[in-house]
Length: 405
Image (cartoon, rainbow, N blue to C red):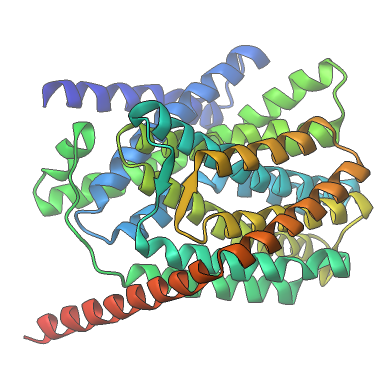
């Protein structure tokens, strides 16, 4: 227990510099500042992972996973919303907002999903990651919002009514997972120390850790991303490419780290669930938030997309629907993970119009083929979601009856 206390104390200390530097406005140079902000993000990710695991003592696993995803993806929101807000003064920023959002989305599926499977294979020798049945809700929600996302490149803009529809989708998703039945988790390490505290003390510590982690991540991600982008510009790298890939790599770092930590600790399904939830809230809250930020800045009712941004949205939607097809069976094999990584890698290495459109067509063709081959899995997925919701309603009824007694 003493060693766990020391580990938690160390992570709390390492997460502090980023907060202090932003609050005090201290500057010590781009390179050392970027390094310190990066250390802050890593430490906050560990704290967030432990807190989320321990939180399963008090809330459902699905809700705990969603909280992880929401906090971990906040840096991506901050960067993209900032670009959308600035687009009122400089239209170029509208394209950069979409670049940052699409880059972050594609990194999740193209790099983070394969990373989880690779960790499982490395740690256990198992080539297939099996997801828990309850994650059928995430998969079906992701399917719905991915299909809707195709309407955006067809229109060439993101309207405020899109924001409303996507926000409602996120609310429905959160309502479903928050009511799911909860099982007491098996905790180890620092999470076990936190989970063993008396209920009132545990909840106080959990709230404090969530707030502290969120503050550390929010204050550090943007300057960390800007530091990396500034360094890249010095080497003559295209600004759009930097905003689409280097900045999201920094802002998505908490999600990668939290999911990787969970997978390494033998909870790969939960780690993958966090990535699924991150993808859902990026496709709903993040995409929907862009026209809202733009409207508040300009008074316009929609965020316009140029040709490059339209292509990026189409490619991102195609990758997303292919990812849904891959996990229809609530599993992800090493071969499927390799497919996700290779297709992502091609568009990353060769970022031109022809490759983007060709990759989107390949994604859609593979999606159609996988759905035909796995048509029985579609019914099984739907059945799993219905059974999970039935259990959710039964659990909610039991809790209500216990309250009345």
